[in-house]
View 1 (cartoon, rainbow, N blue to C red):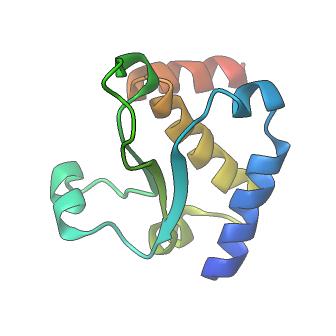
View 2 (view 1 turned 90 degrees about the vertical axis):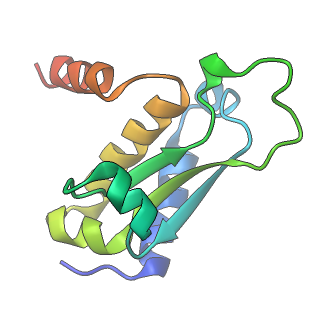
View 3 (view 1 turned 30 degrees about the vertical axis):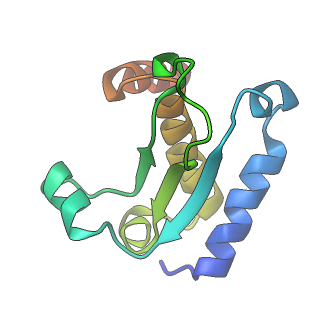
Length: 122
């Protein structure tokens, strides 16, 4: 199911607006980016996996005093790959991906995020 870049950007904005203020105040120096596909280097790094989102930066727990005046961390959504996996409920799919990438921002691994999402579904 197709979605254009502007609609996707609106869903990201809605997600951000719905976040708890307590959580938002802990997220600093992060930009949300929409790209069509991962670039070739990113694709090589992740192999055959269908990448729908990616956190690029230094996770919060690994930052030290030297982490200042740096380029923003990025949470990237890959629109064309999202189209391949999303059902009719785009908002839910985008929320899942953004929560996952924000989890990486807070230092959680894929395994930890998988465990948390499975606990949440029980």
